[in-house]
Image (cartoon, rainbow, N blue to C red):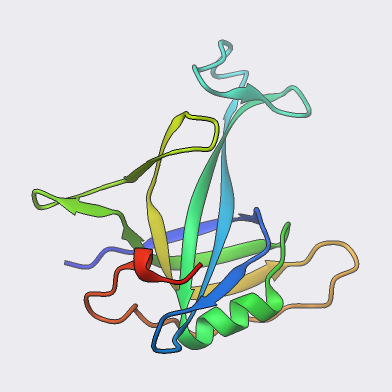
Length: 156
């Protein structure tokens, strides 16, 4: 079985690069994707959604945690910045329990429980830059983390 997820969204924070104990570069960043519903088709606001800036749609933003490894990690760290539009293709990671993927669950600084899936990037394409930024290109295909590697062991 092969699982592939494709996202197009905007980078939500500056990429953070760190290294595994053996020196392998790893870069993490977040991507926001947006889903919209027309008010013409759905006059009542769905629970948890908000009105768009122009007042014509309902919007739901989903945040994705993305991790890139090795050469792709270095490229992403060097060229990607907050606000840029990006295409990311990769594999979903979570916590494996009883033969199924479940989201990672944690408690935020505000005491509210949170959950997320993470995406291990295989491909990152820079689609657009913020105003005043230099033109961007395409990152190389990424590599998987080392076999049996636990991200919690990264020095952060």
